[in-house]
Length: 159
Image 1 (spheres, one colour):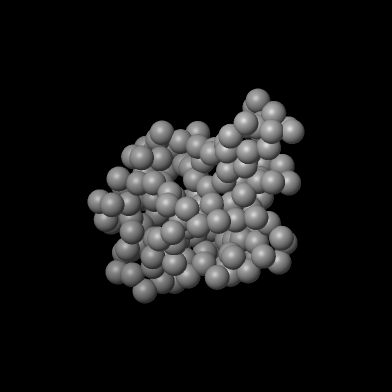
Image 2 (cartoon, helix red, strand yellow):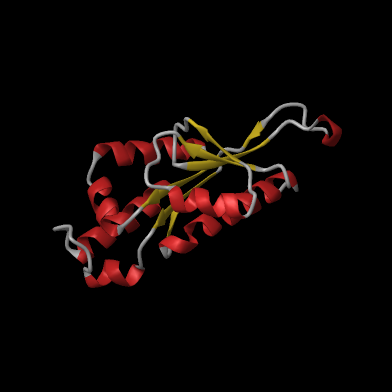
């Protein structure tokens, strides 16, 4: 598991805080074009351990940097297309760098009403089988790494 490498989508923007976290913990990562999501992981080839080629895990995390970005994305056809593509993955997760309280209290700039935005998000979650985590920006690198680490660990254990 020490060789687990985090994949960062080449189109992902404003992720310096995540890269800084990975660097500070000496966690391997690399830029990669991902078809779905902003983050994924790979277990690199290691013949001594019986891994004869890179193992790309069918998992992804989509990150939104605020509720406003979520509100903008959720009304676009492109976002739902990504959710449809996520159905091919074993695991898909949405991370929003903001608080759930701000969502339900309407503490954001978007014209989306809190009840409507929450309803749309929950509808998508149940339709496409994913979960959303609201988390402070300074903890998202930690969350992404540990989420992917334990997904990979359980996959290797056959769970």
